[in-house]
Amino acid sequence: IARWQAHADPPLNETGRRQAAELAEQLRGDAVSAVYSSDLTRVRQTAQPLLRLLGKKAHLDERLRERHYGIFQGVTYSEVRERFVEDWLRFKNKDPDYDFQTGESLRTFEQRCRLHAVRPCPRHSSRSPRDRGLVRRHGAPGPARAPDRHDGRADGRASRPCLPVQPGGSVGQ
Image (cartoon, rainbow, N blue to C red; front, side, top):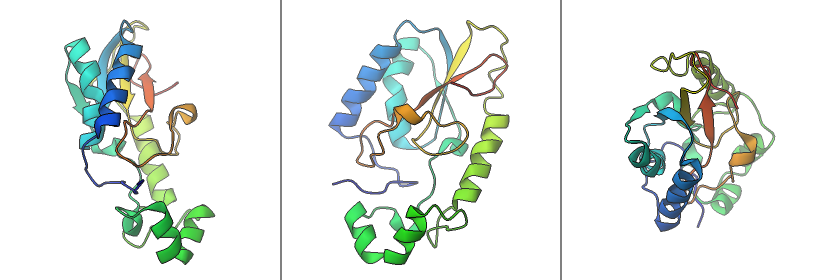
């Protein structure tokens, strides 16, 4: 059953671990010199197979976490629609100031994403196009989103967005 995870920190399930291994195989042979990841367990676990192939460690950054969904966190999608009708409508209508009572508004979340996009990877300062970093982040809207790589799931499967770090440290597709 799909639950809103947000800042909850569950590990990947078997499907997620398999998808993480498949992702690492897809990226085998890519010239990736650094991997940047959210500090949450499921994203770190997603990056582990690739890190093993590369012989590298991830640069962890809490700014790469997905949006904090407050009262929705840990609740199934159908429970949210039943228990939090007004809150669900505000979310569905993309109210930029709605913060899930105890979470993060879209406006605040996008500001965090913008700040990370401006100075995303201070340790990755190479100017060489061959020296590429990779950002592992949660599927979420914002300026650094890879829309075709997020399946919208919150069920413990591997999160999919992988954004390249361009020479000089900016995040791009």
